[in-house]
Each structure stands twice: as C-alpha cells, then as structure tokens.
Amino acid sequence: MVQRGKRIWFDLPGVLTAVLLTVSFLFPVQSVYATEEPMAPVSTAPFVLQRTNTHLPGEAAKLDGQLSKSGIQKLLDEANRTAIPDCNSAALTNVSGVIDRWCFNSGDNNTEEWYPQGITGTGDAQDDDLWGSKRAILVSWYHKSKGVRVSFLDPATGKYRHVLLVEPYTNSYGNPSYRAVKIHAGGIVWYGNYLYVVDTTKGFRVFDMRYVFDLGASSNGNTSNKDLIGRHNGIYYGHGYRYVMAQVGAWTVPGQQTGSSCEPDGPPRFSFVGLDRSTVPDSLITGEYCNPPNPENDPALYGRMARWPLDASTGELKTSADGRVYASEAYRVPKAHAQGALALNGTWYLMTSAGSTNNGKLYKSKPGGTPTYRTAGIGPEDLYYWPAKNELWTLTEYPGKRVLYSVRP
Image 1 (cartoon, helix red, strand yellow):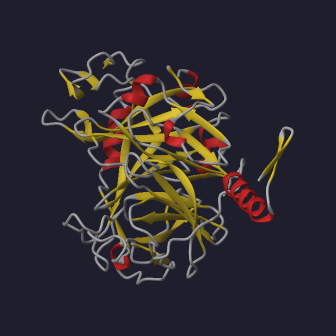
Image 2 (tube, rainbow, N blue to C red):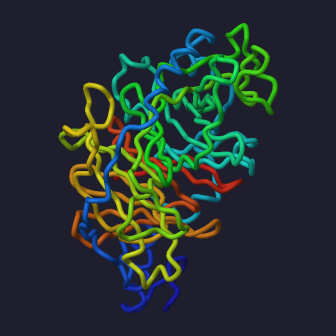
C-alpha cells in the first residue's frame, strides 16, 4: 500500500479485501452450516393432544368468590418496576439489526433464582376489547420451588410487574386454594382470553386473563410473606407477589417421553411455542429442545416442530370430532438446541442457543428448504412476532445478560 497525505491507497487485491471485509461487517452474511439439514417433514401421528384438568374452571370460579380480581389494564397502570430502554447488554455482542431493546432492573437482571424463558404480547392477543388499550410484552420466568411468574411490561412507560401463575384446588378443609405451577415455562402465547404455557413433557397449561387476582386489594390477601403460597388460616399468599393468575385447563399428549434425550419418533416435547396468524385457521407452533450427544452427526435427534390449529371464536385449540387436537404438519428441526419457533406467511423462524458465552442463531426457512441464519444474542429463548411493528422479539436468559430485543423478520 502507499500512503498519500491522510488517505491510504491500496493495490487492487487489497481494495477488494477491504471492501469485502467492510461489507461483511456492516451486513452480516446469512451463512449456512456445512452440516445443515433441511426442514424435512416428519409424521404427525405422535402429535395428538387431549383435554385434561377439566375441573379447573370450577376451582378458579371458587377463588373468584374469595379474592378481588384485576384487569390487565389496571395491572399495567399499577406496575411497580422499571425496565431500561435502549440498554447496553453483553448478550447483544455481535448482534446487528436490533430495532428495540429493554433490560430488566438490576434485581431481575442479576437474580439466579428466576430465569426468563417465554415471550408473547398483545401482538399475539390483538383484540383490544378483551384487555384494554395499552400494549404489553409478557415474559415467563421459572423458579425451582416457587413455580412460574409472568412479567407484564408496558413499552410506552417501561413499567412492568410480575404475576405468579397458580393452579387452583380445594384444600382438605373444603376451601378454595392454589399451589405453585412447577414447570419450566419455556414458551408462552397470549391468544384471546388465554395464556398458553408449555409443559415440557405433557403439552400445555392454560391460564385465564379473566382470573387475575389482586391480593393487595383483597381483605384476606397477604403480599409480604415470600415463603407461603395459597390459603393458610383464611389468608391468601403468593410468595410475596400482589397478583396471581389461575390455571383453567390443560392439553396433554397421551404418552410422554421419560428420558433426558429426545425420542425422534416418540410423543413430542413442548419446549417452546409461537403463534402464526397468517394461516387459516390461526395456529400454534411448538418445538423440542434436544441435546443429542453428537449434535453435528445426529440430525434425526435435533427435535421436531409442529403446527396446531386454533379456534379464533373461543381462543381455544381447535378440536376434531373426537374431541382431540391433531397437528396439521410437523418437521424435523434443522439444528439442535432449539429454544423458540414461529411461522409467518409460510416461512418458519427458529432460535437456537449455544451456552452462556456464545451467540445463538436465528434461522429462517421454508419447509423442505435449507435454512439460513443470522447471529442472535447470547442465551436466546422463545420467539414472538409483533404484527403492528413487523418485528421479531426474543429474550436472553443468563444472569447479567438479560435483554428483550427485536429485529426484522
């Protein structure tokens, strides 16, 4: 090279190299792994759900006679925590094209007791008449003993509040009570009045936005004791949280996997869930997180994704004549360690992770096609599409590296 004044002049090969490096830096190439697998179809035969826990609506109704209820609008108005907009997060190292981002407050960002997993929002719910005019992003967290909480974040204000998910039951004294929901909650979708939460080896737990109870506004509620949950001596507790949301149903696969590795042809796992409103009818997309011993050599063990029909008139899964729900299509996951998926206008999106120090990848593919990918955050999880903004949202899970962020599809 030759330096002239403050400009540096390169010979032609050097110019080409510099230009290519610059273009690659500014516009990351949609690369493909050498061992990439196409989205091959698989049998839908194992993908069957049946309704269970049919007693839960009655149990939730009993709680309605004991506790004050809260609408989602009121819950957002009274949010008590503040998220940080446009925050800097180590989880976004090497990630380009970020449109929006939010970090939790320091306590939620750093805690090792609760881990964020699933994401949904009013973009999934859509119907303003059901919940109010505010917009919200919802995030599920799991705790080994306290169960699952869901954060309701108002992106207009940055305020958010946690709501504890509970399973109602009648205690030994004949009084309505509730217990913790001890599942991983790896994915969530808000559809109509219902919050669908995946239960890894079983299917879905279903919660009702109309049964959000406010312990702070109830004369028999306690919001200070972080150890107790349910009814004790006539007082209702929620591990210190003000709001609890009741489960009203479940959908379960007839058989369940029992091992730590995914079975390529057995009953499906439910590691995450996303919504597709571009189909008729609307549909849920579920998939399996699998960790095969040789992930680059065992594509049959990467896991599977499936599509489940929804009934927009009821907000429930669409049943066949026999009362069961059958997946309309299923595919092999193109890479192991899947954490989230959804579909939009015939294109499927899949998020994969690579541990607490490496970036994940966001894949994009048509069925039968070879996926391409873009770099995702460190520790990425579930996926959520916000139609009004045309944005794909995800979140990252590791302490100190937790951020909600969006990119274009």
